[in-house]
Image (cartoon, rainbow, N blue to C red):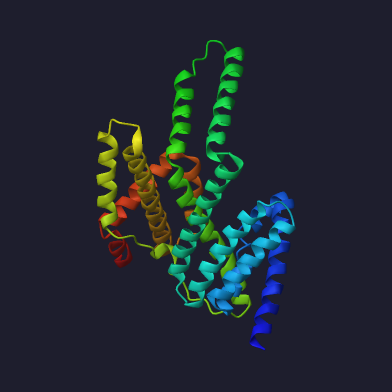
Amino acid sequence: MRRVHVITEGAILLALYLALMLFTLYVPIVGMVLLFVLPLPFILFSIRHDVASAIMLLIAGSILSVLFGSVWNILLTLISGLSGLTMGVFYKRKQTMAVLIGGSLAYTASFVVAYVGIILFLQIDIIKDFIHLSKESLEQSKSVITSISPDVNLEQQFEQFEKGLDLLHILTPTIFVLSGMTFAVLTHLVAVPVLKRLKVEVSQSKPFREWRFPQSLVWYYLIVSVLVMINSDTEGLYFMAIMNLYCMLQFFVLIQGYSFVYFYSYVKGLSRAIPIIIVIASILIPIFLYLVRILGIIDLSFPLREKIAKR
């Protein structure tokens, strides 16, 4: 009887997943949002049943996804299924932070597998092609600007853009990791209200304003920053490893800075719109991004929060 119940629920959730997948693939704007909803059927099934049954659902979903479209639908199903299965296991254990960490790792691993699979089977390197097309666009833009305004010299600016594009290929591992973390957080934000609606108990995660990374992060950041400055060789695995580590540490320091902004706004009773405006402004205006990063370093280095809370 229990086996029949598992199969029935699996079939319903699989049908729901396939419907969501078709919307994701064929409805452009809605599809972008549904990317973060796709793991939900696998999350629900993993919460209610054992891991072995969830793996069987993932295999069945991968096979059926091919029948409803391209053979490459299997990549989308593997990404959604593996991430949903992992997050569902930790939701079941009521370990919210583990949900985010496990989901990030699952998403990152899935992205890497999909990227390698596309290179091996389609002979297409998405990142290299993107860089190549971007450089061609830069050259066309340079030609257009030069023909309109021959006196304008933009060589230095365009050279910086090209260096940035070259650096993009070096930072491929960081792109995968940060993408995995972003997808995990957004999937979590979508999943929590749905799970609560379905009467699934979800443990409360720590508010963002209370997030604190270990103080040792500052030392790692300073050491890696020095290594980046003194390193003269811009080729090889050493440079690639240092640059990726540097960018990851910058990201964590930035998150710490945003956390402090939210903490300060909460303690001082400021409008909720203020930290949101600061986040948006820092993304649009680079100087604000540096200031938030400095705030993150100060927050990690000194007991600033305790002093603000006592006032």
